[in-house]
Length: 305
Image (cartoon, rainbow, N blue to C red; front, side, top):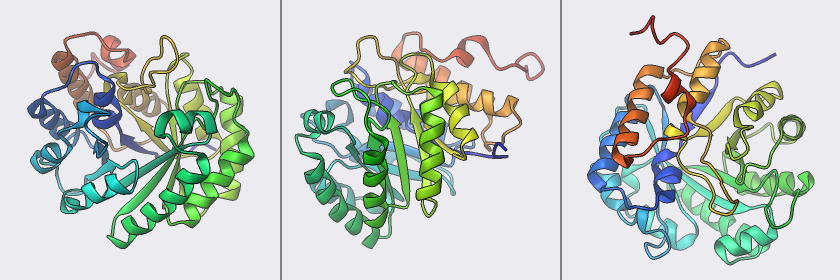
């Protein structure tokens, strides 16, 4: 039994923009976020409070947050890497409703990504989650490399689910499992979410797939089949991980929405408005994107003009 509706969280303005080789102008970011916020999307990851020297593409986090104009009912999220990032974010907490924190299930990937052991990250994030909850913010914890690591190979599922339990017990209301380098396969995903639903039913479970090897939407179907009804994606198939050679971005939001609608699963999102947003970011970046639906149009393109 597939769900009749799903929730989609748009991560392009953070995950996508930070992976672009050029820095996107603040005004363009604001215009694109405002456009996305009028497609029916209810949750948008706007930016991240990371050190500008590490990710200069997001150095304008405060300027973007204070300039965007989203309709009521659209939740704005920011990603924070650590306690210092949370300190910066809390100075502007009236401009967003959600905080995302992250760590890797793979010790090697976590060390290379944030220069901490898994145990060190977990201890710090437990404190960050508590402070964010005390500030009245909703917290999502993202576990990267949940399905595989380019340095270590397969990541044991019990380790991933144990980390998820720790983060949920620390106060995270949502746990997202990230296929950071596009190594997941549908059988693996189905088994993972069957176990996750059984052991973590008290928190929202979200799937975050990359399309590096073309299996992103197949993995969505497997997650749906296992009871997952929450997904993260990026308009235009922006984003991705720089580690695997030839890596593409996240699954495209418009491809995800198109597939779900054709399957009779509601998202609350206007696909044509979303395609206009993806076309707008394509114009800003002045390059072709990986989104299939942006190129081919939805199935009912002619009927909808």
